[in-house]
Image (cartoon, rainbow, N blue to C red):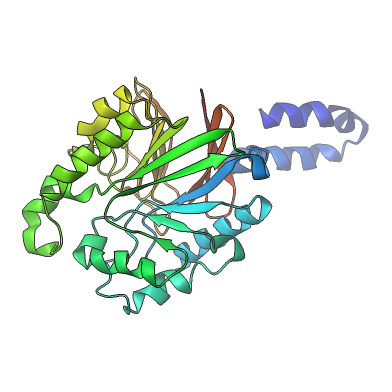
Length: 327
């Protein structure tokens, strides 16, 4: 689309200035090789929208790729600020943190996400690597850090956009549903299968009784993925029926180190944002896959009256994909 617009605007110049042909060809080649530069970011709605970033699988000790994504997220936020940030889990590799005084809080978080646009609240879910340490320490850190928001293993928050649009977000703990983690036993000392009993009632009651205009669910493990775990059991898929019955608009997760968007039959669009610190290969997409790329990066969600826009960015702040959901 941007190539057609570019050609239309420059056609006269090509014929008038022969030397311009070389410059035009150079631009077209660059555009084809670096597709993201051809996609414009959605217009910033500012105070009339709810706007937040989604980043996952990021806590790799302040290594180069993690820092690149952090800087890009800050840069994009400087053009249109976030109200908050969502983490889809695996906040600390390789084995979580062991206390609120663990050095990883500084190495992987405080000293990495230093940009002014990253000082807003971070609403966090737990990943499997977090469970290798002490998830209770990540919960306790909420009492120390003004921006770290993890009041319990699962919780919900409500927001409003411009006073007109209400959003309810359900932050799940997907770990106790993973049968492979439960079988691992001592490798996940705080993992308790009984957590699924109370959580099942909490999520079903919450979704069925919610009157919000938009209902979003956030977890760590995917329902749909075409990443390296495509052919592994997706235990969270047990919630697909409930999500559709209660008209959930979107499910955001991580676990896979890439960026994906899937829209199977039903009301829910499934987003994977797990490129916060490293990337892995993509396998063959589903027929209903709208976007899947092995890339570092993050997503930005903007909700306005009757519309939600989710933009995927790479580690350079370039737009990879824009997905819109309209009520």
